[in-house]
Image (cartoon, rainbow, N blue to C red; front, top):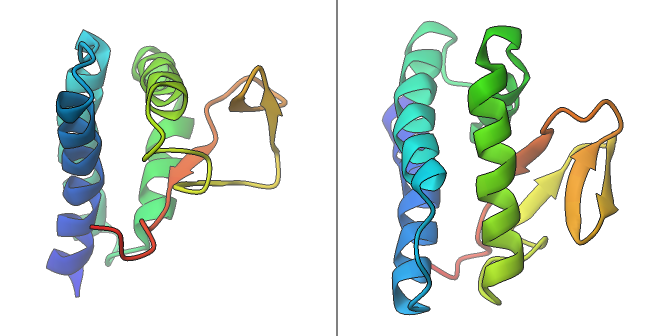
Length: 124
């Protein structure tokens, strides 16, 4: 079960990267960095915290104070993903209760990135 969830976290980012490539859009540097950091952080989190859901992992990662720089990168990356491609829209991103839409992109009221990767409704 743990490996399935780790694989799902990686699949989320790989799906986004593949979609970006198909769309012929340049893939922002921060997205590649975020993908690498998130996968590594989530792998550690799954191992140490007995495999929570992927959304919890990503939420945990984006809320860490010492990860403020990476959190900003996540927000920029997710903004790019949600605005650049029809295949990746808010239906693919599950928002926490504190998120709201502002300029087409969900940001929490305290300006932290509270967006969580969600399932792709079997579109993979």
